[in-house]
Length: 157
Image (cartoon, rainbow, N blue to C red; front, top):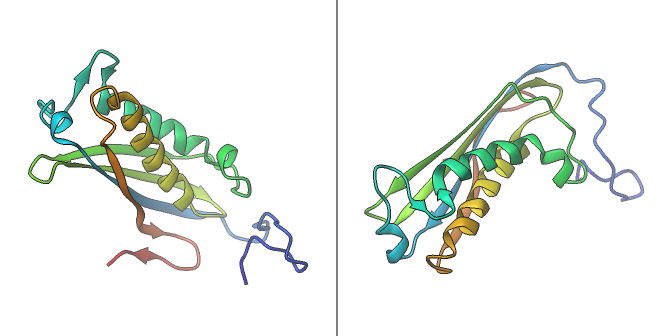
């Protein structure tokens, strides 16, 4: 049974009231493929445009997105984040960037959705800022790499 459905199959927020507060972490990644003309602009780990530095702006947007996850996804609990780190790692040889979002909290519920939202919003912001150069950008993968805390840990293989 899905945890966000009540006994009558209606959408319902999960009641976490009886759970213990524990340290929760999550790490998600978004992989973005860059068309050649955009990859050619990569200098010193950044792409500068008329709109400003793409990576720096995407990092800030990713943090903001993680913090606002419960406003974007209807049944997510609002969480106070202890930490949120967004890092963009370019791979020039593959013509890709990997946007990593790592989130930590002490709460009754996990932060997987915050990490996934942070990585996704950073990727979408990158697209928005870079589309003036090319619309051929592909956000090809967003996935959870790891979560800790709660009932069980998860580590992607």
